[in-house]
Length: 195
Image 1 (cartoon, helix red, strand yellow):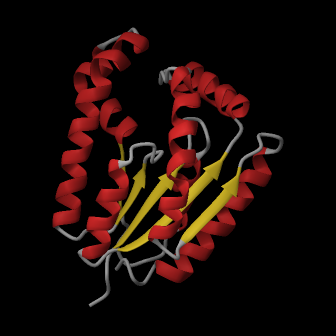
Image 2: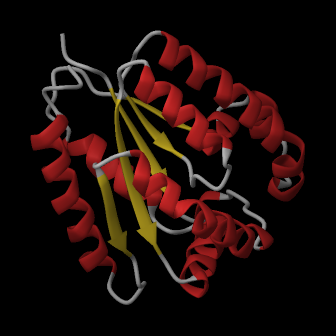
């Protein structure tokens, strides 16, 4: 029996984590696609969040309940040994514990870090707010960047499957090509394993 995979993203809001995962998911050729879990997606699926027209207020009201629900889903997926793609920045030190437990229970851990300057991420967050109506407080960017920076060495030590992509914001098609190339590499390396 093959071991399930747990692919965890790392990066600040607006870095391009969801862009990468959308490309990976679209190109994944394993027999079974890993479950895609993201707390933003959990929040956006909440009927009360959808019903609130003020997205800043909606974010303030539903960010924590969505996060709690997301962690419940994550724990269920791990208990069921489901392969998963986790669309999360990795700024919480508790994720090292989650990944260590998953590794000990037989998961292959894959980490994909997207390095993005804060000024570029701010632009992406602004665009996302306008286009998608999805609010992210700008204060999160610097805070999350510092937290991830403090944890990155521990993440690297956790698995030999650590990958990094740079999104300098200068050329979106170059970033998407980098995402596509890594998605192809991961699919070839781990696609059959996740089945």
